Length: 429
Image (cartoon, rainbow, N blue to C red; front, side, top):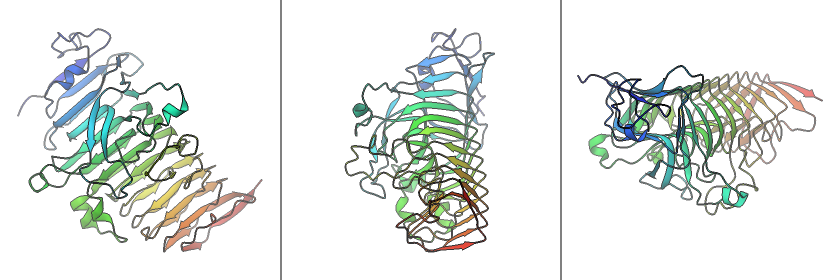
């Protein structure tokens, strides 16, 4: 077994002519790391206080689930974490290989990412700061339809089958002003995707088993805050009822999104996708959907309309969302705190919502089945607390709804079916 290697990088006292193997002889730039073959167990350590302007860290085709994890972290005594400040560099080409579930969605094009993990598994990225900003002088330029897609951290599965054990922990990701229209490009704070392999028969289906996003602070990003797992195999999930075996073959497993705080997100805050039993817990969404409106979202063309919510699963089976908080989601065609969207068996329990302009919870369309919303608290949500949007069987019980006078319990023009039981409604001034 090859011995693991520690690589040190410092913008403060590094030199690219160094060997990069000790704190006394660090590399100067991340480009030196991008040119290396990283092996299982290797560590890439960035010196605290360093600022890597116009740089990026892109790893490809590395890691081994049967060996020690690769680690990207920090070292040194400064109180400030190292920052990768990409400024629109780090451009790579994204291509799902197939059109998406709605033909109007963009599925290929150039993306700028500060950190890119492409066919990488058994890796931990922690304790660093990431930004990927472009300065715009006019709102028209900011809202341009062909604006660059940008990510803080982009993760891609394609040609190594199932990728295991990817952990993002204690990252501060901010000022990533991507393209608000392109909801399924690797676009926003953290976005993970699966693309069609070059030879699926040989490598297996590209998917994830074991993703943890823990304790990250994601601020001022667009379009998404955290999204895990949009897949080129989306057609395998185009049914109302979903079985476990479909996910074990084509979808994602063991997805944990926990303890994250998201502030000022242009679109949706947190979404696990195509996942079996994902757990979303102890997260806070504070002001999302800020750009899903007629002021910013002006040139969508054939792309989907103005829809975004805070914390919700897409096409998942038995998703569990507990102890989350969603505050101040802005009004759009959705605009609610929570949404059981086209999934089977979604459970919301012990969550809190407040001042969400589209209400508290939506059960979205006919493929949202076996979903429950129990023991949650909604305080002064607006627009209509519950949105049974064409769903067949939502169960809403034992919740507390503190409602402003004049706000309806059910959002207008929503005609799905709900069972309401033992909910407490209190009118507030």
